[in-house]
Length: 500
Image (cartoon, rainbow, N blue to C red):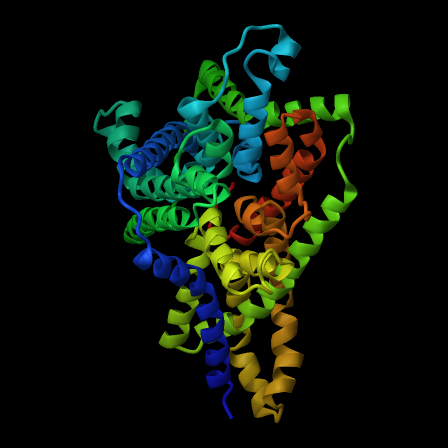
């Protein structure tokens, strides 16, 4: 008897669970008596303005860095590429916290240098921070496209008398524009969904105002704003699905000799970006650690984070298995897989708002660890499915067929053939969900049980209280956790990301 109907049924249950938050919000929106007022339009304008400025900033930083790391004759080019991708390892709210506390009168950096430095907050501060932690999306997407371009294309333009700068602008860049657009849309999606940076920088975007309304017991309005944000995210996801990379036959990428002055300028630019994105926040957190030590930090906070994240990792892997298997069985399975991916596109603050409504209607779930873990699973399920599906597709081919032809039953074939082949994928999926759940802020703020502090919520609490120095330990823990998460992602994507 085939396992497909059972697996499809389980996959349908997982997909239905993943769609629950969106369905709850839409249900609230239908019955909500909330007008589209001037304040809502102002919030929408702020969100779009921050997003637009961040996309422009990320392209202005990411595209030149992509050209330099793809073509320039720099020593240690692979190392530079890895370092420039490293800001993905820092959640933007950590960078926002460091810049907000480090600059301006009385800030850590002013105290250290004695220089009069401006405050970093508001729209300008939010744009700066979001740019620093999203430009790698543009860098990596553009660089991959540039490395696939054969040198003969550029050489042909040069033989026709076209100057190098003009050849790069008119011949090479158009071949990569779809990848630039794809990276820019990822930046837009991240910026629209981000809660921590607008909240810390005090920019009234959808995510910040949803949280303010929730705290003011304006749940109907928070839900309506969540629907509006979800609509914007859906538009970005649609545009992203329509953008495809220009396919090039792999060839020998061009090599550009920059000369001594050009190399010095390129390396100075890269060092400047890395200093702003990595050295500043880590330096601020290090200063706090030296000055404050572990003051105000309870080790139980780390244990709480680890417990919730471990439960989420185990549950996500268990839920991802039938979804990944169903995706290998046909069109219906692939449709269920896409439905299960919905949670990944839902901003954490929106997911949290929807599940608060669920908890209010189901008392046994309200402010429970189970509801928090469910939020993590819905949010990060696609990471687990993605890591499991590829090895499962390989395992479910001729090897399983051979085992079955030799008399092995479905259970024995899975245990002796499939499981050993997909075990590395299962472990990678669990590790990735664990690490991502550790640093999730908005959903945790809304759904955590009373008195249940995690690393992210502890950092938020010391920010609200103004005891910035007490954020050193959780901030540095989160940097380490995030670094491990990004390392896993880059390792899993190595076949698609050229870091040579």
